[in-house]
Length: 267
Image (cartoon, rainbow, N blue to C red; front, side, top):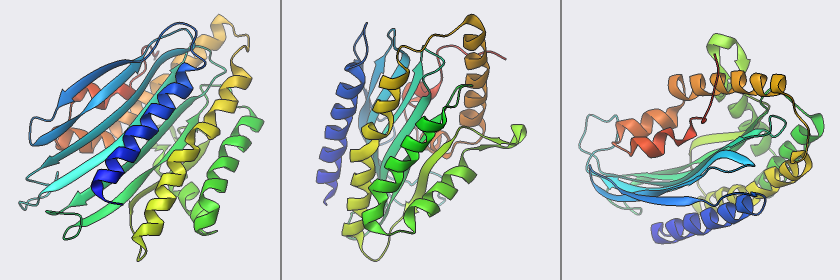
C-alpha cells in the first residue's frame, strides 16, 4: 500500500465506524470540525457526537507531516496518519471502548524512510464487567489476527495488559484487548493486511456488546460508580498514554488530542 492508499483506507474506515455508531444513537449525529497542522503540512478532522446513547464519542482522523520527528534531536522529517476513537456511554452498563490504528514514517519518503504501524482496541467497563462481553471482545481480536500468525494475539494481548496499566492504582484500565507499536516485519505487505484486519473487525468487537446492553436499567449509584471509573481513565490518559504525549510533542491539535476526555467524571 502506498501512503495515498493508507490515507484513503483510514478515511473510509472512519466513515464506516461513524455510520455504525450513529445506527444506535437516538438523538444526535457526529459534528465534524477540520483543523490544519501548524508546524508542517496536513491536518485532520474531529468528529464529535453528544447524544442520548453516546454521552460523548469522538472518531478522529489525522494526517500530518513536518520537518522534525517529535522527540528527535536531529532534523528528520516525518509523516503520521491514523484514526483514533473513544466512546463514553450514558448507560453505565455499556463499556467505554478505545480504538486506534496509525502509520508513522520517519524520513523523506515511504521508500527511503523507516516506517512502522501501531494500534489496537481495548475495552473498559465502567464498574460493570460482564464475562460474556469480555469473551466476545477478545474472541474478535483473536480471530482478526489468526490468519497472520498464532503468536500475534497472545503477544498483542500481553502488550495491552502491560500498556493499559494504571500504576498508581495497581490495576489494569479495563479488561484488555490488543495493542502493538513500532511494528514492522520483513513482510510489510502482510503487516499492512494485518493492520487493516484490525480496523475492519473493530465494529464487530463492540457493536454486539452495545446492542446487548443498550436497554440495561441503571441507578444513580451505578452512575456514580461510572463517573469514578471515568476519573481513572482520565488519569491514565494524562499521565501515561504515549499517544497523548506524541500528539502534544508533534504540535497536534489540543482539542483533537483531548477528545478522549469524558464529559463528566468524579473524584
